[in-house]
Length: 244
Image (cartoon, rainbow, N blue to C red; front, side, top):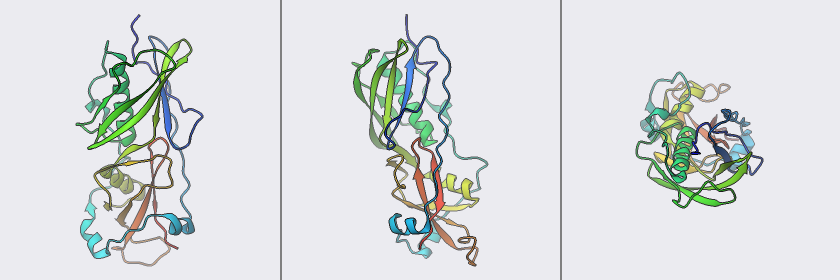
């Protein structure tokens, strides 16, 4: 009996906090699994931020010219997954698993890269107890994702680990616009960077013309730095960076 990657069950494992593992089961029948809830992160205290946050050295005059004006979006950025290639049917297991990886990473990045591609070893089989590495090309970056197969209620489940995830500058900037109601934003980063999810904070700073902290009497043209956290599932958490 042929197997199809749909429906698939997705859940969080009890495992390392530095990578997210998702499981999908190749099965001809079953219930649709729910998406894990977004994680919550507490903002850093001013003392923590001052001690360990990355520091920027861009003069404010230069920053003013780098800020990009755009309307505050009505919602957080989301990937249009309809722009991805269609789910492969009656294809080898390696192609089904590769499609799932491409879909999951695009969803976590909140952006579909039309040139992105994923590839898994051709020798992959629907057999429990095997480990492989799949390769994803996204935004000019090449990333590797371990995948292992386990027995799951009579089916074979493939478990992905996400040691890093791509972060798209446009997505980060629009997230800051939505989270903080600002229009002029700039992130001091490449167009796409690979970030370890669940780490302390992303290795870059963003800036927005926001008038400064609420408790500071500053001109409306004041530019403030923002730190970004990439949570376990790829969700972005953005905070105004507070210096001691």
